[in-house]
Image 1 (cartoon, rainbow, N blue to C red):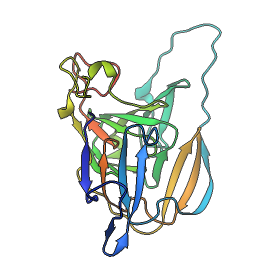
Image 2 (image 1 turned 60 degrees about the vertical axis):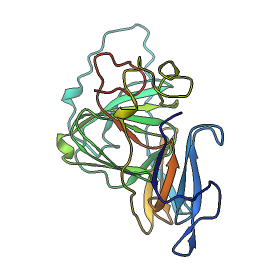
Image 3 (image 1 turned 45 degrees about the vertical axis):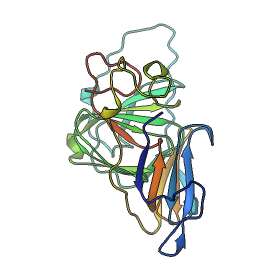
Image 4 (image 1 turned 135 degrees about the vertical axis):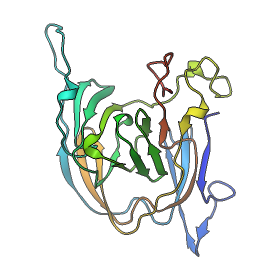
Length: 262
C-alpha cells in the first residue's frame, strides 16, 4: 500500500456527518481517478467551491519549436536574471505535450495563492530553503530537496531568501508516482528501489486562513483569477495518500523516474 497519512481531526468513518464547534463540515475528495484511484479526504469549515469573481489572467503560450534539422543547444541557465515570484519567474527551456522543464530565479515572495489544474509539479530546490503552504498543511524544505505538488493543490511557497534561490521546475501532465517496478505486490517499496518510505516527508501542521482569498488557476496554459468566498486553508483535518511531498536529493543509483533520495 502507498504511505498513508492523517493530520488534524477526521471522523471515525468516511462519508459520515462530522462537525466542529456546532457547525457541519464539508468533505472534499481530492484525487485523480474518482473513487477508484489514490485520494485523500479533506474536511473544510466552508464550501470550497464558492467564488465571488472570475477574471482572465496572463497566458503561458510557449509551444515547441519544429526544427527542420537537429542542432546542438546550449542552455545557459545560470545567466537568468531575477524576475517575478516562484511561479511567474519560470522560464521554460524544454517542453512537449507531456512535460515542461524550466528554471525559476525569483525576485520576490509569492503573494497570490496558485493552483495548477493541468499538471503535477516537481520542484528541485537547487539553492535556497523555505516553506510550502497548502490545504494539506505546512511542509518545510531545504537545499537539494524535491517538492512534489499534485495537480489541484492550492499553494504558496515562502522562500527564506527569494533572490538567492534557484529552482528547477517540472510540470508533468501525467501522474507523478513511484514506478511499479519498485513496488512489491502490497505496494511497499522494495530493496532495489533507489529510495524508501523513510525518505518521503509530508506536511506536519495544518494551515489556517480566513476571509476571501485570490487564487490563480492555471489550466491549459491560461491563468484565471478566482476570488473565493472562503479561504481554501480552512481544513480541520484530512487523511489519505494524496498530498504534497518533500524528499531529499538523489543518490548515485537514483533512477531518472520517481522521487529520488540523497
